[in-house]
Image (cartoon, rainbow over all chains, first blue to last red; front, side, top):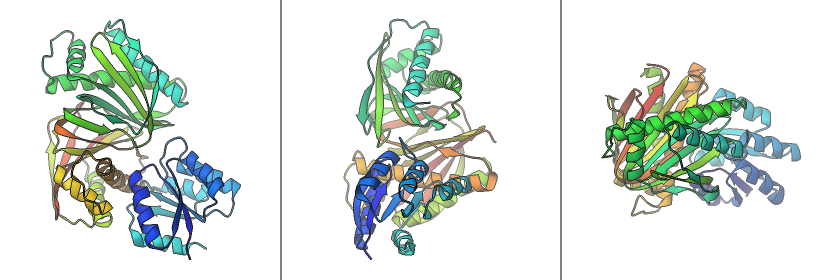
Length: 119
Length: 154
Length: 158
């Protein structure tokens, strides 16, 4: 089923690649945010089905952004996509309420199968 | 610690270290915000920060200014060419400045680690320091212009 | 440099190139770097990391034609100059992914909490990177689209 997706990442390349993968699979990218704060704002405005969230970002990092989104919407579906994924970061992400944790590098299969796992 | 404080400590460190070398008459312009910073100076020194502040601070100048700064650091031994010796003097100068800045930040209980400075020199240089927005400050010194750029996440 | 710290980087280059751009590493060779200066091939991304008593730097240094090819494979577009934003952004993201995935392995196996500063990326002619003295290794990677070099510096261990 087609999903409306919000992408939160500070790299223009990640936005470009995720959009290409998601659109090819029939999903819609409804918003692009460059940092956690923008991500939280856009989440409130757009009410996407799924969020792809990076960890290290300016202004507000991904963990904080997940906590804020989760507090306002307990049913939010958030996929964390990050290059740094050690045990400490994974623990913090899980406590913050991430739905799925994905490590970079990623390819189409990794992204699409993660989306398929969501309710 | 907020970004404004981080910048204030770095600028204070620049001024204090230059002052230690008796560089007087430094003028500082106001802070300017830029989107996606590209630097095209001949010599740029970059220091990475991690911990409570995460990012890079860049100090940029022309070859001429770099030679004068290197001469200053080497107690007046005239650096006439930006060679290996000159570049290592520049690395040392900005290492002193970042250590000075970190000491100032530690007084606010900020836990920050810094990397060794990297000096980047060449022709037709184009550096993208960050794809995000940045804050820049220009200094006018007797040695010429020095630009300080903050691509730091707090 | 300790093999325990270098091997994750070599593994990460193999995995990331294969997955992100479908490039195969054919061989790699490790050489100590005696000088504190690096002469660049023309395009480089530099990322520093630190944690506790450790600090380090990872440099990816590529000839312009290899950087253009990687951007082409990653984005599916042709680029004519390395001064294009998306070319430099591609190399930056490549370095970020390699560094992140290698440091994840290092953190999990050693307990050192290394954290990355975001990479910066540059291009130019006659480029030199200089640093204060620290031991580095250079790792030359040969791939099916050309060669590039990685420089790893870690202070705090020998």
